[in-house]
Image (tube, rainbow, N blue to C red; front, top):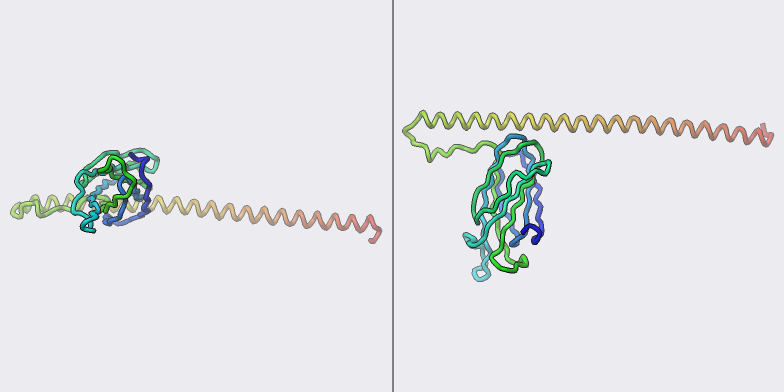
Length: 218
């Protein structure tokens, strides 16, 4: 199924906790998002498919018969998730290592032979880190449970911020080391150029002096 459609790559280097958007693809066309995620972070994705209706000239509220294939790969090309879902759903995975994670989604087709002419609208939402507490599901009279959920959510947010800061620190160290290596290479290249130019100059002066002596000019 993956080889039959074109690929749409959406580069989203998002540092916020949530990303919501929508985009258009054709049936069996693959769309990939690149998320830079710290390690040991829970990531939740929600999506909804809408199919273009030629008669109404609008996208239908739902896309019956269609499904969405979700494939998630880690920076080391390890497959974290590979599953077929329905036209609307939610998927979750946990990052094992920091770096750019590739999240690819691809619909199936309602036709036996699809040439990618059926346009779909995909509503997509990515949430990184702990999920907010749904206080509507909590009994307002149970204050202890409400406070407990609030504290758990707060601890999760703090943990997410700490991991994000650690990841940023590692990235800063990595880029600083690359910058220092580049500066060191530039310095040694400048020294090598100076030595080469000085050697060539001395050699040219010596050759010119030998030429003048041979011609008995000096």
